[in-house]
Each structure stands twice: as C-alpha cells, then as structure tokens.
Length: 126
Image 1 (spheres, rainbow, N blue to C red):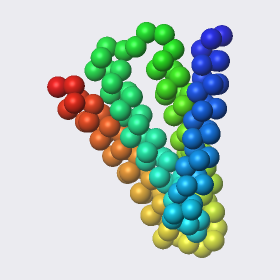
Image 2 (tube, rainbow, N blue to C red; image 1 turned 120 degrees about the vertical axis):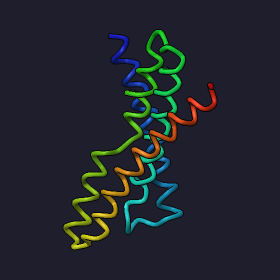
Image 3 (cartoon, rainbow, N blue to C red; image 1 turned 135 degrees about the vertical axis):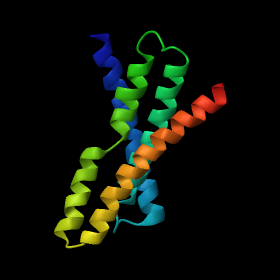
C-alpha cells in the first residue's frame, strides 16, 4: 500500500514540474511546434538515465526511493501520451515533415539522453 502512496506523491510532483516546464518552454520557443513535450521527453530520459545509472552502479537503494523517483516523479513528468497526440495533430494539420521530424527526433533524443545519463554517472563514479 505504501508503494502506491509513494508513486502517487511522486507523480504529483512530476506533473507539477511538467506543467511548469510546459509554460516555460512555450514562453521561450512558442507553441507552433510541440517543443514543450519534445524537451520534457528528452530531459526526462536523461534524468532517468542518471537515476537508473546511480542505483545500478551503487547496488540499488533499499525502500521506496527508486520507485518514488522513477515511476513517481519521472512518470508524472515525462509525456509520451502527449507526444502521441502532438504527433497526430501535426500529421492532421498536413505538416508531415514536422510530424516525422518530431517523432524521429523525440525517440533518438530520448534514447541519447538516457545513454548520456548512464555515461555521466558511470564516468563520475569510476
């Protein structure tokens, strides 16, 4: 039961951070292209790499801390459901090249962010 509470609280925090990032990124980069979701997915994957790398290299963490950080905060922060909607909306607006660039860039960027996060932690702890 405690695990659900930990995830619930973490997801609320992550969702609040996501909202702040949505507003901040839209303010600086505009809203024609879904930069907010693009940035959040890559940043969230980078942080997931850092967190997962840390716990993997340190032999795990007892208790609910990994669950709170990964499923909770990062689960509430990252936005692949919003990503799917944004991709379809670009496609339906007949902006096929932007839709393709958005999907490809999001996937490659998120994977690269996670790999970079793992590399940073492994390098720092070596």
